[in-house]
Length: 424
Image (cartoon, rainbow, N blue to C red; front, side):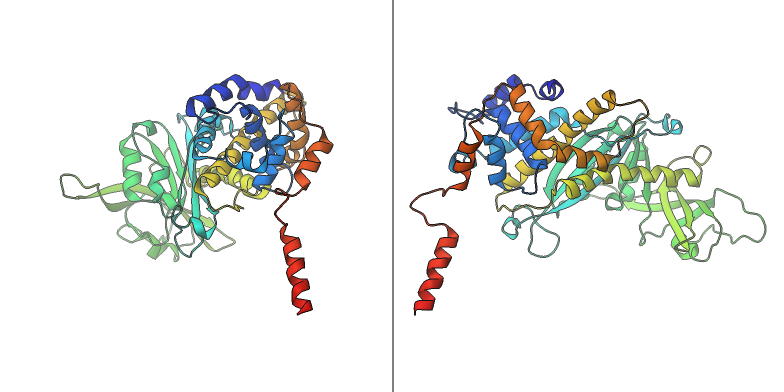
């Protein structure tokens, strides 16, 4: 348990919560218990309701909170507090993987990607969807494959432009960015190149640049490609690889009231998919003398790293199931999910140190194991922190009874109404 408490020391949690005003004039709330209740309450069991988080807190802390007392503490300030904790320790989130030595020439390999979280339709104003009435939040992650960390994260609405999740600049120098099609933009590629960085992206179907040069010679009566548009000729080719230089046009950012056009030469590589009888086309600025077409296909598969994180969040922790109409509650739950990943990877490091040297822990199998032991971990963590929760029978009696004695529960109202209808 000391590995977890070192990750988020109780003193740090209490002091930062007091700085933000999360526990202002409130001595009853035990902040460390609240944080760990969200972390392990998020992953344990089948329910992601606020009532379940309250039960998780009450089974951890010295004193229980009533439903009203718990809900009134779920504020935008708590959302900010949890966000700060994620930012402090997000570098602990990673998918176990060892990259090839051939990538050592790069400072880092980073993968940008996002996933959509479906929300209640009442949140469509705060989290605007692209279409339909149901709200949509977009979780952006920038995964550092080299260091096995998350370098950046953000939450926007679904309609927010993809550039909000990937900023270009000098930080890209010497780095290789692997980009999802959602981040496809010639201007972005040009800025990465001009900042001394590298990129690999799939070529969009509707993107059809002109070929200016062939980077590989073919024997026999090969179809000449220079001067042709790449998408127009790809379907007529049967060679294993396409390796050409193309020219693209794009608009620069507006400056002094005017917006100019620029052109740039990039490399487009096609790797034939025999099963689909077509090509996977990639656009990049990586030089041919160092990276063959098959290398680019291998590099692009590194995107699977961040896909595994999203898959774990959605399939194991059911991140996209939100039963709330409040924006800050959505944010609290997303940050709790990321904190859960941080705790999960911290314990995975500990288990890896304990296990045999040749032991392998597949990410999804580890996620399932972590989830099945979450309640037990939380119980031992409570003891390690010196908490003495109320007796189990007392907590069960409190959770199971009516919230207000004078308020009939819904089933009683329905039964009464049904009886009256029958009598009539």
